[in-house]
Amino acid sequence: MVFVYAVLGLVLLLFAGDALVKGAVNLALRMGIPALIVSLTVVAFGTSAPELLVSVQAALDGVPGIALGNVVGSNTANVLLVLGIPALLAVMHTSGHDTRKSYLTMLGGSVLFIALAFRGVFDWIAGLVLLAGITLAILDSARDALRHRRAGIAAGPAVETPEGADPDMPWWKIALFLALGLVGLPIGANLLIDSATEIAAMFGVPDTVIGLTLVAIGTSLPELATTVMAALRRQADVALGNVIGSNLFNLLAIIGIAALIRPLPVDPQFLSFDLWVMLGASLLLIPFVFLKQDIGRVWGVILTALYAGYMALVLI
Image 1 (cartoon, helix red, strand yellow):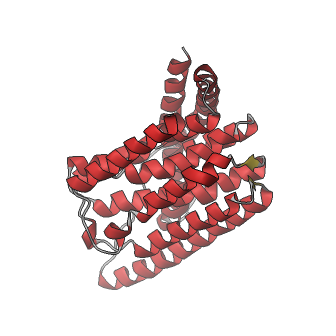
Image 2 (cartoon, rainbow, N blue to C red):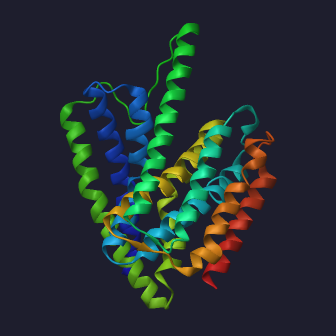
Image 3 (cartoon, helix red, strand yellow):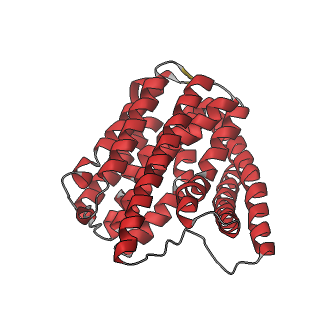
């Protein structure tokens, strides 16, 4: 039954997270908040809600290995698995899109995260530093987006439609989506963390390993689904941008918030292996970002095989 509860927790997290995004987006738009700001903040935080709730719940339950493993494992999975599997289905033509600035921001966030990890604990000081970093990144993105929009207005107005936006959504439906999200997310997080802790005890493996594998892959499913659809629709900029943005939020916002709730001790395994795998996976994006290479099927095989190898090393 413990595996059933784990799957149920994941399903609840995915559906509740989607409901929260839809409710929050339409509430913000109804309150007169510009669509651009909604896209950069509400949608970004909303789509990271499952990872956030899992990490916060793990911190509260005293299993920091799951909290950190969820984020580090998700970031590795986002590059190797979330880009690898869609590339097996369709070539992602990233050569025509400029993601250099957002990629360098993500890389800077990764280096900052690793540097703070070597302090041995993510405490309130580290949490404030990480949250300051994500705040600066959001403000910079907003400035760039506003500049691009002003330049676009001169050539012709463009309509920005945030994910989940429905101008005709009635108030009762907005309230229902918000309620489903706010209730479903903590229940799903509780189920997943409790069952993941039991699974770790059953197989005699550290909670860190469960965080890096079961929990990380589960909370990366929304990114995988989004990227598969983007690849099939030939929207390579969406696919690569989704991974870069998600990784930045995972490191800075999620661990930043979790560290303010309760200190997260860093397992020595992270310092000696997993953090460097995460950074190495991020560096694998250089050919696609700077050298204008497309992510074809050969790269899909390489990335997926590297992830399979990493999983084997973690589980052995």
